[in-house]
Image (cartoon, rainbow, N blue to C red; front, side, top):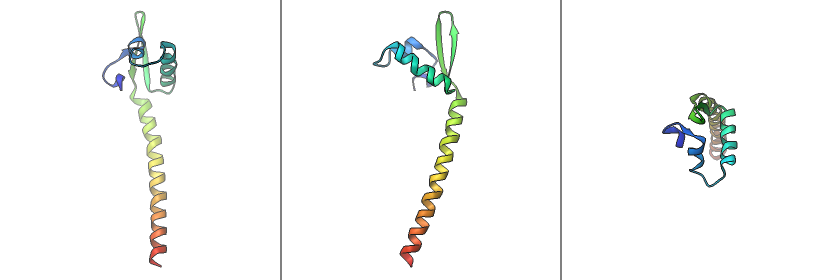
Length: 86
């Protein structure tokens, strides 16, 4: 949520968490590898920004399971209503 407002350096991000800078760096690396953030070297600092691509892929994945469970629950509802009527 911090990066949704502006790009931040890794140090700026780390200041917002009760963990070490190396621990924050590990989290950032995971987010970078997953495609959720971009990292740009500006001078001696590394600036992180959100990338929409990673979130689009996540949204596709979530939508798939939303549709999957919605259809399963509709079938269960139909089955239960049919049994109650009979």
